[in-house]
Image 1 (cartoon, helix red, strand yellow):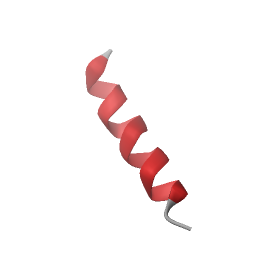
Image 2: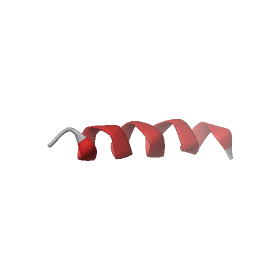
Image 3: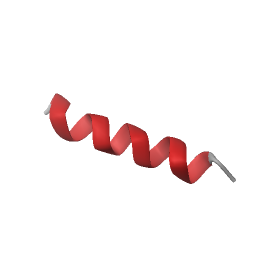
Image 4: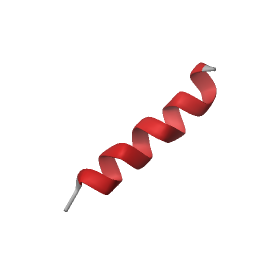
Length: 18
């Protein structure tokens, strides 16, 4: 499913939001 891709994208973006 594309859920993993969605979560991965959020995690990658969150790495810079910290």
